[in-house]
Amino acid sequence: MPVHLARAWRAVAGGAIGLVFALTACQPSGSSLAAADAGAVDGARAASVAWDEAHNAADVARLTQLYSESAVSMPYNRPALEGRSAIEADFREFFAGFNARHKTTIVSLDIVGDWAIERGKYELSMTPKAGGQAVAERGKHIVVRKKVDGAWKIQSEIWNTDGAPSQ
Image (cartoon, rainbow, N blue to C red):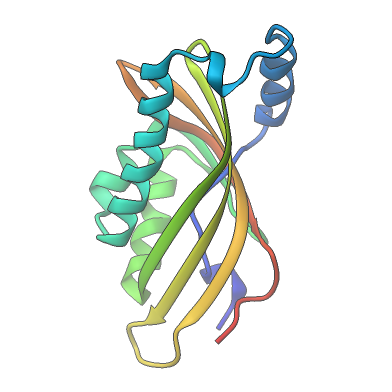
């Protein structure tokens, strides 16, 4: 199975790495998740949980609503997906071929104003709908969310695997 089909759907794009460093550098010494507004922390964590729930239900419409219109997703070994419609098409293609289960573990979460930067790890299991063995994948990601109309939307994401998927 081509590795590019093993999508974990998490992490940070384009200029977002610079944004991560800039936002983190602008925080006062000692500021972190603990210093962030509790409602913002809960909202960003809930957005991550909602992503896993929508993914595990193969609910493409609900999943893509978690992305901003101008979101950029940078899957490994593939070109960047620019815009919600490109991301939606990619999810549709993936779920047409696989039943999948995704689990996110947040390693760190920094919030500065209307921006949330999540570093995490994931586990993904995929079973081809056409038959065949399930594939397991583990990896890590960075997701940058922006608060839009009160909701934490993914603006940029990037992820990669910890090794080749196993069967």
